[in-house]
Length: 68
Picture 1 (cartoon, rainbow, N blue to C red):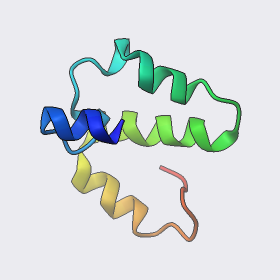
Picture 2: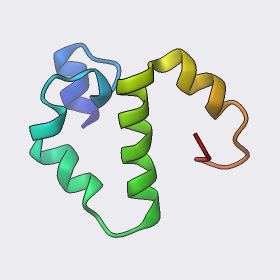
Picture 3: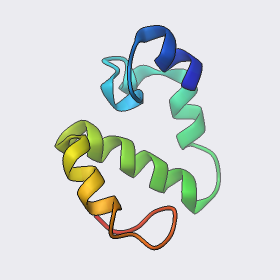
Picture 4: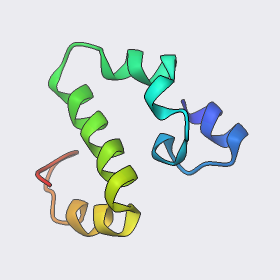
């Protein structure tokens, strides 16, 4: 995913117009484990609300992920 974003000149998958149909990211989100759903939630939040709002919320987290 990182290589794909770099090739396309994107910051993250949240900036990609093909997010909904991307096989790679959707396989990643489909893995078992709570953290993969949190990663998906983060990407979708950034896509909907933007990086600035995400960073304000994430600054308050005490772990790798938290509440929105």
